[in-house]
Length: 294
Image 1 (cartoon, rainbow, N blue to C red):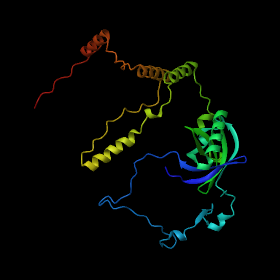
Image 2 (tube, one colour):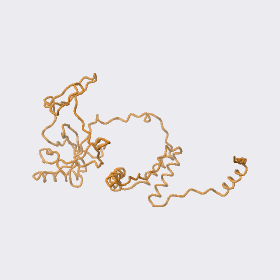
Image 3 (cartoon, rainbow, N blue to C red):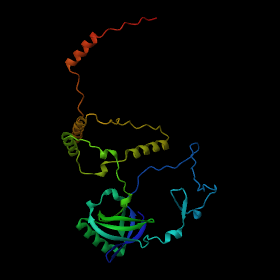
Image 4 (cartoon, one colour):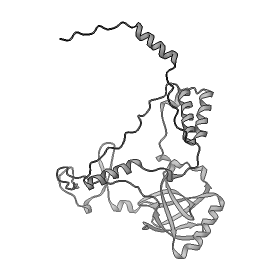
């Protein structure tokens, strides 16, 4: 890994020099835009919409659009006087129980590695934080943006998780929240039973990105000049359940079978009485006249 930022954790009068690394990476198949006929790469030019001229990076500034459609142009000098910390400090503001912080606030995760001279205070703070069972709430400036963040310990390393500000969290303003929707006690009990049946320890390695794997197979087949075989179609998505209790009961039974490895129950064959009834109905039905051939 390559560090993307250097700074220090400021904890009271203690300063711990650290390096910052991205803790996650997006595993995705990336594409370029190309000309369909010859595979040539598509390039985009930075063109001014007013004079049609191509603009170099050195002549590009930031513009803020007003409600009237007018643009306010901001230069580097306008940003110099702003109170954005340039001290490269991770300031510890307080300590709080982790369960008090809603995960919706978390934006991105980073690892913090101590510099050689900061290893001992790093380990000291790490051990103290781990034994307290809390997380540190900090403030940090990264990439021209000031953020709240938390410090927690994972696998012996500090993880810095940047957070969104409260006014960046949207409120779930949905109509159904105002409706008086009745849930019967039997339905609630059956739903709770389904949850209990599906309980398990979370192991992320049990899951994988089937779409990315299938897409990679398509690309490899193209490279090898082989015929691209379409993946098997999945089961059709079921619509909303008409009988909620019946759907919940069937879900509980299916979850139990999956746990025990039992095969799905075969559909019941038609009973003798129903079969004889069908035969009688066929006999009673008026016979169609056979067509004469020309």
